Image (tube, rainbow, N blue to C red):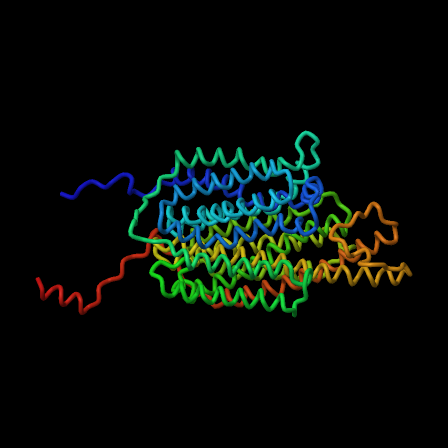
Length: 528
């Protein structure tokens, strides 16, 4: 008689999954909103701490750098160590850093603590997806990934709105933009400690690829530093660009060489070079560049080009949030029902490109209804495509590689978003400076030094009416060029999505064991 099954080894029931999912969604919300809630409060934060313009940029960049560079490392650690324990460690790191950011007394402290917070944010983003992948099969995962897409939408679009409301409230202030994450993560920690029960396989003989991890982190960080400073501190074609880009290529090339030779690489090259994971990564990279760039500069458009307050600007971006919420939930359930994922990714990239194409025609006088329709299309496209791209990769790997595979696609999505924001920001700065200069010349207003467009922040209320109209028109008209660039980037995602294999998602959590070769079967029979 066979021994009874170990209860701890049984898969979690739907009720148990939902209970654990509640804690996962709370901690994911806290991680995602931490990168957006400070966006409208940042001028007041840096001004209060007596910071400079370069430090203003680094408050955002430090977190993005740490999060993007550490994502694949956390993903690989999830394959080597207990996932629940790693998630608890990440929650502690993130919470302590958030508390420190709220207590920071100068910008140097804030930048350093934001980098630490970025380490925690990168860990939480990938570990949540890995844990969901370990709880349910890829086919059923579509339903739960719809919830993830909704959380990401609310945090991405609702973060600036909440940050503006907190900053404007006299009884709160900007420090609560950081403090608010602490009680959320404490609640999530307690919930997950009680509800999350995973079957963990301890493999003490395995080792972490520290050399590969260090090379990847250094190469990606150097590349993102170049994207951050190029065209501002030095030209695209300059010795600084040559050193930084060349150094990044050398470091990443060395990382690829190491990853192909170690038994347990941080980024599994054999997974990344497969057809479907490679195409999913390319699509995710393009969607990430378009999505993050679009979300960042829409809020700026409503504030500077149209004159709305930060809170009003957040409200005006709700069509995008609602689009993501609706499409991610609907697409997730349809994927779980049919087991097919490719049609929804293609549809998502098509709608996303159409939305950005609509927004590329806007200027400082475009109807808000027209803009709302374009934003809704962008949101629908992101919701239908983004989380389903993770399913494509997870469906093609065994459970033991789930963490590294999920970390890889999350890494490339974050990398695309960071590059997108930096490149689109450079384009916006150049377009705005050119349009302000030509507009002031047309009015016969002399320009001295860097001119009106030279500063990064513009006090519109302090400007004479003719100058203010020129500046608002410049920002409004230049933003359309950004979305034309975003449409071209998202079109790349359409092409790569079309070449995905039209497979059905598997019903099991793990890949089935390969059947023995016929020759091996004959040998086994002969031996008997």
